[in-house]
Length: 554
Image (cartoon, rainbow, N blue to C red; front, side):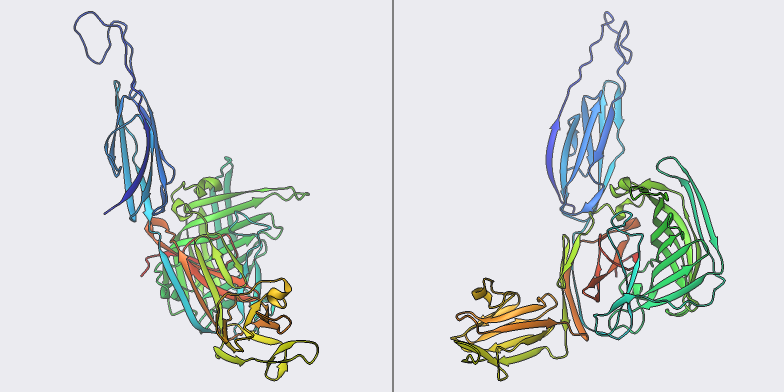
């Protein structure tokens, strides 16, 4: 059963028609003898949004001319008589499609407006927990987005590749082994009219390209999840980031996203982004060997920038929707061939406002997120990245002795006064200490005695016992101190082990693609040299490198 919440502001104007009477009888449509003609009513009928999450407000507005009354039908809370103008705000408690009809009547007749259909998507919480993934030692690749040069605050025209080696602290540009040229082709066909009325006709056809493939592995997986391909033509450089169909199927996505493609001319004057495809695909064998092919619809971005002499030169970004194409992947040869045709263009602001056949893909507000010390936060989700080692618990006995290098008492651990400690993220440490000298933690040397405050995140205290669970969110430098007496403690260094991590968190909301298909979007975050993968269901404004797929969620 659909449930709606309603807020109403309406007003009614009564229009009276005065006309010269034509002496005696004779009524009818013509006013006769000098009477005036009143045209049929006109109606302006709109809504602030045609789709969104349940519980989010949508306002329906209408106004009319030459009308004396209006009548509502469909999913209004109150159908029947309406004022000739007004507004009503709705929130939708149940997922589904809601249709609103409106007709207005005046002396000139009755006019029925085009009905408004609003799609309400469920606002859902998805708990995603991944445990005991191991570092397999593969080179981990990632595409990082830089905000300094962007098309639309989602994709950048600068793709930077990094790898992580064992030890997680090393990062350097990825290197690619170029194979012998293959007789593969890539055809990109652009046609239509830009937002400014310019004809767009472009066909790029290439043969014999140098290509290389870098498989990208997730932690604990023996088979790659994504592949990064580079192709170099004589007059176009192409970067392809593709997900393996078997991986997409494993997470419940039946439709396969072919790839994200960035193509750029060597002089940098023209760039073509094809980040999102949806359609049908086939494969000849279990990937990552064999081939796959795809016939798809497209949601694409187009960028053309004038080559100028000053940094003030700007470019216009257009959005193309409703295009078609096909791609053929040969994973043994590391090649891709196919064609893409873009022929339905729309300016970016209109697209993001919810207009156009594919608009529901981005009509829900973008996801804003940030990463600080391993904690991911945003307006629709939050998560902690917690690294785990094989030893998850450790007990430390703490004694007290007179200070050998000064006055007062100090803590003693393993026979060492004021010992410097090392914490491993993923380990829980239990300190047994004197009740007269309660041990506490701080990000400031000597804690509250040094002008700082007590650090309490994932810290439990009781008489004679202090426990701290160390995660990747734990500051890299801490200090332990006595809550009662100054000068007793020392410093702690937190390090991240390489062998295990847990990713726990909540993703709120789900994004829907064409024809109600759900969207699977995998984001690879970069956190202090560590590649971390997290699945979410929304568009994002930050660094990621992954395919986008539409399909039925199993």
